[in-house]
Length: 351
Image 1 (cartoon, rainbow, N blue to C red):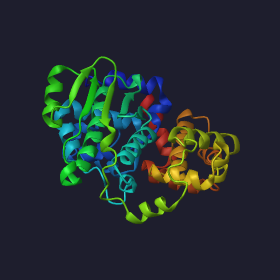
Image 2: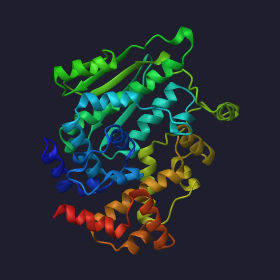
Image 3: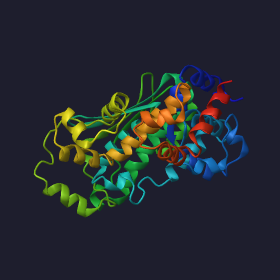
Image 4: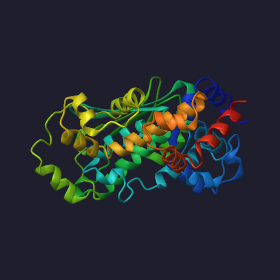
């Protein structure tokens, strides 16, 4: 049993909905591939290496996989692996952002949207932008490593833009990165990886970056998309905020009340904006209504199934599917197993 086991068992017992919620496999898959999928990586779960090919796995399984990696490989090796991983994938979310500022907003929004235990906030001041990172306290001591991983992803993204900058722009930006709850020995190790940017903090984990670097262009951004946005006379005008969490809350509420998927017009009307403005704001974050809706449906399906109060067909109906078979296909695509089997596995894990 590793040092994180007790806190993760407590999370599963006290926060079953969070523990059962779906989370993307991306970073954990990368680590599994990097270190050869050793058997000890899957201890405490019912997963195998093949399961890392899924789109999502339950939060509790993902956390246990990461905890096993931290115990057996060590934080330094895992964080070094983050630095080696490509940040901007061709055709991915970040390739749709025109500059570093937009890319940071997309990444922070995506981390919060897809990780139930993360809150990553982007704030814009006159001279500095701030990114504050916090994990749910119920995650326990593993939260510190998760925050470190998030910081490394952000630093990796910033470095990728500096590397593509023009000759006069390649000076490394002044970055203030503070980490909460990290021992001095680990600080020294990760500074060797991250080129001496981290200091200890008693309060929070955060990153600060001068605003002058936000306009660094994204070489992977599609020029046609840039031109389309520049031709729209309303680009740059202030609009109501379409934050990811509030949009997901809207979708959840409509599903619960009406058992149907809201249309873009419904969401825009409630926010006091046009459909085109909302669609553009979603696009600027690398999102779509379809993807957000799928995320909410899968989160709710995990909650409903874990509660044991609904049959699979009732869950399907409550999520606005026309047929239970459509729900089952979607669930299997995201979780790698049928809803009924997933629920039985969750129930067994609690016993």
